[in-house]
Image 1 (tube, helix red, strand yellow):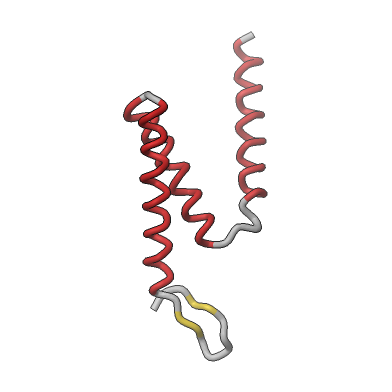
Image 2 (image 1 turned 45 degrees about the vertical axis):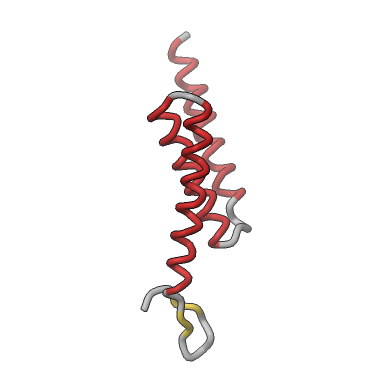
Length: 89
């Protein structure tokens, strides 16, 4: 019985990971960075506090952190002679 639940958990993990990857395919850089910040912040908040309030605060702080990271990355964008965006100077 325990082996069956481990297999089921593995299948759910694989499906969730693949759906997350496909769902982010059409997102902009900003959306991906903010979404990643929200996810990491929510998990960290849940691990630290163990309460729904801590999870929400962690998600909010992670979203703000992702947005700030995106803003900082966009300051470093420049374009080459053919008009293609290059990220770092």
